[in-house]
Length: 251
Image (tube, rainbow, N blue to C red; front, side):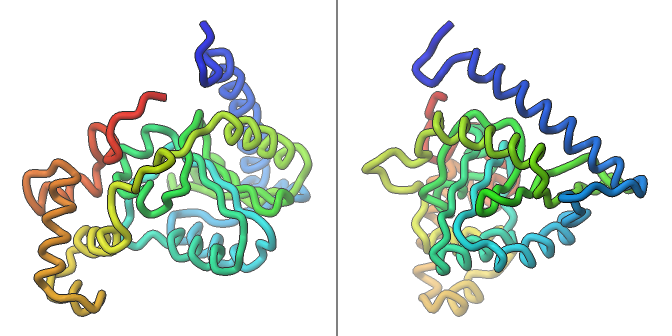
């Protein structure tokens, strides 16, 4: 069956390519953990905080571009990647992100945090830096924590570049041309602090607005999420929605 977005054949082909990449990364990671290190492949971090630290250290090394794909990522009020992306944008780097349709439901703020984000056939997670280094994710560590690896070797880098090129070519904007993101910049800031448990008065002081403005923005957030109230909105921010905040877009 053929469809406008490439159809099942394209999805199956990407699945196979992702599977081969995962097998290569897992083999290299397991060898590394067993003490058999390979050139061009090193541990970036183990555990969410350690990985965040590794990405923070890597950000200044990027010179031209940071391209990433994410099949799913839940909203975290203190997600370090937001600040890193802002730094990279201020330095004039080419930032591109493609997520799966599912990602827009589990992270209702995704397309408002990054209005340029695109949606595509995403079945793995990686970051491609300057086309010369990749951050890939391997098997869990000894205690079940996630592991991230920095790869510059040709087999991993070639596979990542190939998958990125294919995913990007068939992706579409999460926010359709001419439309606005579901939440304004200020609503994103308010929602982040609301999800972190910050009180209205503290949010107002931090953002330099009145408490009345914060209350109004919270009401708008609750309505846009289709929530029954503040607590339900906080739950939706953390657990996700049934359909994207931008409305149901078939892909």
